[in-house]
Every structure is written in structure tokens, then in C-alpha cells.
Image (cartoon, rainbow, N blue to C red; front, side, top):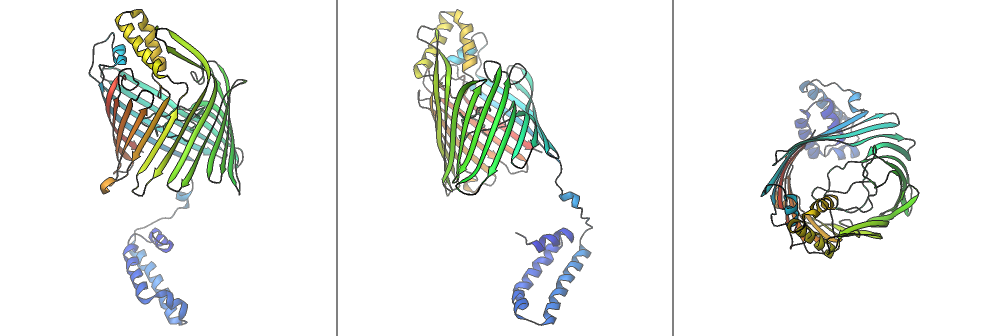
Amino acid sequence: MKGRFELYLNKFVGKQSEVILFKFRNWVRKIKIKQILLKSSSPFQISNFKFLILSLFFLNSLLAQDYSFDFEDFEKKPYEYVGNFQLQSDLASLNKLSKLYSLSFSNKDEQGYFDSYFASIQLKGSYDISKFKLLIDIKDQLSYNTNDEVENTFNIFESYLNTYISKNINFQIGKKSVKWGKGYIWNPVSFIGRQKDINDVDAALEGFWMLKFDYVKSLSGVLQNFSITTVVMPVNRDFNEGFSEEDGFNYILNNYFLIKDTDIDFYFFWEDTFFKKFGFDFARNILPSWEIHAEYVFEKNVIRSWWNSQTEIESSTNNTHNYLFGTRILFETNTTLIAEYLHNDAGFETEQMIYFFKTIDVALSSDQSLLPEVKEYQLENFNNQFLMQDYFYLKLIQPEPFNILYFTPSIYLLYNINDESKMIGGEFNYSRFNNLDLKIKYTFLSGNANSEFGEKTTFNKISFLMDYTF
């Protein structure tokens, strides 16, 4: 790392100073300039040293190009912006033996594969005015698939105004993406955020319209930091439609504490005046390279529905307990291991999943009057992740294996403990060029008949992505 003297010399004099500085450092080592300055009282030696420094500046000023110094270049600009352009191609092999495939193609020509192509641009910018900050994040995506279907979607991911009332208090109003929770693939405590995509956990998520108030305070002692966050979310056909089944107002409270290097959060959720759910999470580093985390949520009056053995829909209303715990370890080889177990109390039980797939058989073979209802049920309940109750997740990440620079491969396993089906995936990321990422992703699904991953419409998929940031 260059010293301060070298930085100033390069800035004001020019790049030619690099050569002279190299010679100067060698000269300093030979005559041990430090000893001369400390031990010698000879004015001649000190004068020679001063003369050498002045000569260096003069010589480099003759060699250097013209340079104008402007303090405005170092002032913080009131605006910031970043853009992202992405191209993606998905090639999927369809599982013709699955019941969901038969349901999807009951009135269509059979296909052995399904290709999708995407081009998207995402723009994010902010502007500061005194104690106010305006931020907007928009994305436009064009897609095309095997069926010659073309679709253009435009989404406002975020659009909100932030007001800094004081150094500890700020207020936000608008559409904002909030990520709560410590889990890597699932966050049951994410009361006001969308769930992550298993295949792209770092992807940006669209926010919700809300009023958000934050108070943050740093302390010295056992309690090092705490914050209070309150959120008000309206739900109607104009704002946050689909967030909850009924229109009204949702009120959320989050309390955060940093106690002896342990992050702890508590969450409370009300629908209008009705208390709906409560949760907490924590994360702590046992060692600098070993972290543990967990989440828990209790929710009241959760409605569940399923198909029974008589091809009829049953439902029940119960309180649920959702939880996740996991760990992240960084080994000396620079390999990262992530392991998590999660329980989704509102998910299907094994028998309920089997009865649904058997209902599809009946609807396709002997009682086609069931088809509309079965298809509607499938669209409402089978597009989510973690359909059943118990899962184990394992991921390994190894940057630059075998000294291959800029290359980071990773593999993961998502195992359904209830029906023993599984999803196996891998990602290969190459980032040799500035602001450009090249990725290849592969996913393979495996399971027995009437299992979650064994009955998916696709059984493997490969994706090619190009990400350019500007």
C-alpha cells in the first residue's frame, strides 16, 4: 500500500513519480535516512535531504502532464444511481410421467421441453435534499417462451421518501422492500416482505406500500445497540392487494437488540385490532468462522385446506408454529458451508399430498367434472415454495478452486424429510470482467410417485445468465 507521501506525489505531480519513488526508496534504504535524521546534528546532511525532496518535486513537475485540482470532485453528490442489465435463458426438460404435467397439458399438445428467454433492465437511484432522501427502483422485463408467448412486465420494486428527523430517528413513506430474518433460504419472521427464491436467494424483491418509523440507539455495555421499528400497511385494491385476504390496516412492531455480540429481534403483527402473530430470531458467531441462527413464529387461526381420500376438500383452522435453525461455517480452505432445518406448520402432511395427486388421477380418468376445481386449487396452493412441513437444506460454496481466478462454484441440496424427495442444484459464477457476471445454473429434481419433487412438471433445468451492472 502506498504511503501518504506517495499518494500526494502521484496526485499533484504525475505518474512518472512512480519510477523516481522506486529509486528514492532504494536510496533511503542504503543510507538509512532515519538514523541520519535522529542521530546526526549536521545541518549539511539535513539540508541535502531537503534539497533532494525539492528536486524530486521539481523534476516530476517537468515530466508530468497538466493536472487541475478541484475540490468539487471530492464532494459528495446529492444523487446516486446504478443500473443492471440481465439476459437469461432457461432450458427445462419436462417430466411426462408426473401428474402435474398431465394436469397442465390435459387439453394441450404434449411437450418434452420448455424454453424461456428473458431480457430485463433494472434502474435504481436516489436523491438527497437536506434531511430528505427520495429513492426509486424500477424493473422492466421482456420474456419469450417455447409457446411463442411474449410478455412484458414493468414493476416498481421500491419508491419511497425517507426523512431524517434526527440522528436516531427516520421516517419512510412509500413502497419499500424490507428483509427481516436470519435464515438463508426461508424467513418466517418476514412479516412485511416477500419470501426468497430458493434458486436465487440474493435477488432483489419487490416491496410493499407502507409507513415505516425507525428509532436506533447505540450504547456502551452489555446492550450495545437497540432499535424500534413500527410499520403501518394498508391493504385494499389500490395498495398491497393480495397481502392479506381482507382489506384493512396491518400494524407491525419490530424490536432489535445487540447483546454481547448476539443479534436478537422480536416481531409483533396485528390485523386491524386483532393480534395475528408473534416471532423472534437470533444470530451469533460462536467463533469468527462459525455462526448459528434461528427463527420462530407463532400464528393464530391459520386456515388450511386439503383433498381427502373421497376427492373432497376439507379445511381446518389452527394455530401454527413455524421455525428454522441453521449454521454457517467458513473453513480454512475458504469453503463456506450453510446448513438449515425448517418446519412449515401450515404445509401439507404426507397423506394429504398423496390424496391430492390421486384426485388428479380421478379427474383425468373417470370424473372430469373435477378438473376445473383441481386446476384452481393447484394454481392457488402449488406455486409456493416449501409445500410440505419439514425440510433440510445444505449448500457448499468454494471461491476460486484449484486457483482458478474469478470462478466460484456452489452446490446445494434441498431434502423433503416428509416424502424423501429432493432438489439438487449447482451454480457456476465467473466474474473476470468489471461489472459483468456470467453464470450457469443447473437444477435436478428427484422423488417417488406422489412426492413433491417427484411430481413436478420439470425434472431438470439449466439456465444461462449474463449480468451487467452500470
